[in-house]
Length: 327
Image (cartoon, rainbow, N blue to C red; front, side, top):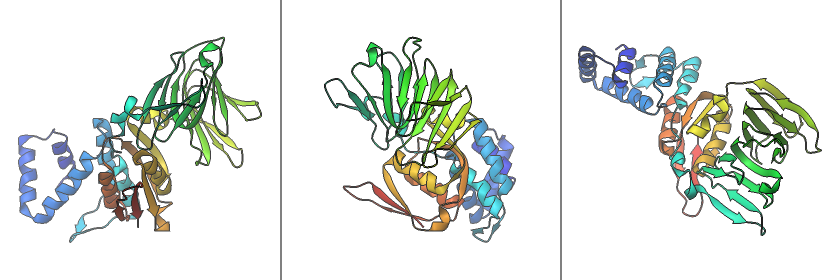
């Protein structure tokens, strides 16, 4: 069977004759039907963009080999190419935007802390109209005098900022390792306390990067990304595809050459689960793709199983995050 024909059928573009040919092929042997189901599962878990689906499908077909009996054999490259099927969904996190994911607590009489639980996301509007989109497991703190001239916030986690312009009062983002100074701009900051680096990307405007001793050591222009290593205090500034770092705000996460260990850490945050990698060989396997946030965790795990040598076990725990073993 020509698998591009199956692609057309799943996209709703196959002709009546082509549809008939596909059904005849499926009825010819039980193995054909099983293979069709396999491809259909992969297809429905890919991103909703038609262009992206077609790209993923082409990459999959490029690395695919025929079945030998009931066992599918992949070359090393084919397994890597099949990992593109990690264009899958990540839970129903996007539907938690808004007050359901927002818990505000007054630390003092005038301070406000916004905490976003694991597995949720929130939109926040600051007193001056600045909007902040907070990712899972993030916290934002601002003081009561924020709107009287001092626009300073403290961030733990990941957030996308769209800052209201005010030439007289700069906007400051403080993180554990770095601070950022802006006047009116859009940018993304990823600064989780347990990560080894701070990752910041500028979309619009200009952004000063400031060390904790108060020195501005570089300034970003639109399209720049800075990766700052906390331990060595070294950094790299480079031009990047902005979608790779900001697509999460639209319910997508795009990554390139990211290890399974790092993906596990993200899944922990997004789903409020605890993933234990029992097979050390899995940790450094690299994947790339676009992750949607509209599919449950079990579907993600199943795609991982189908596209790699990973096996998993789910252990529900009543009073703790669900435990997931990767073996």
